[in-house]
Length: 91
Image (tube, rainbow, N blue to C red; front, side, top):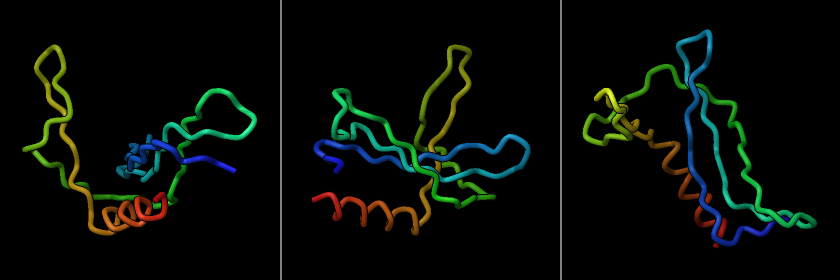
């Protein structure tokens, strides 16, 4: 049985290598698994692809040393409602 104490759940997007698509993944850390001493990082694919991402230019994710910026994406409503479902399930 997994314990979900202090577990942070994050929705990540990963770029497909040969296509102009992004894959939705859920990343959970720390997840404590019975029989193991160290916490595990679990990444689960949702089997959903996004072809058009809306980048939020007001939310900078990071700035590289050469000055280029990467931005966070705007989370679609169905992903936001899914995260709310996960948060209520943990409590």
